[in-house]
Image 1 (tube, rainbow, N blue to C red):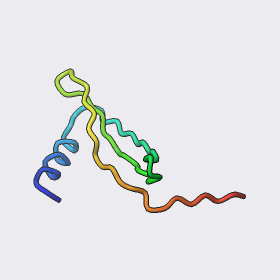
Image 2: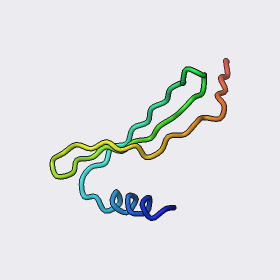
Image 3: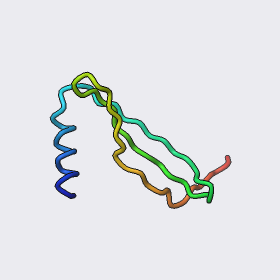
Length: 65
């Protein structure tokens, strides 16, 4: 973990307000699937949204029953 990631992690752990987390997934035009994880909070009265990670999904498996 980089020092910047460590600082961000510590900041979230010590935050006294409410943290909200969201996920989103989409398919790019070249058929790659991605998923994003974000955190939302309020800092000094200003709402903030920050991406935590964006990952490419290696494979999608659909099972029909």
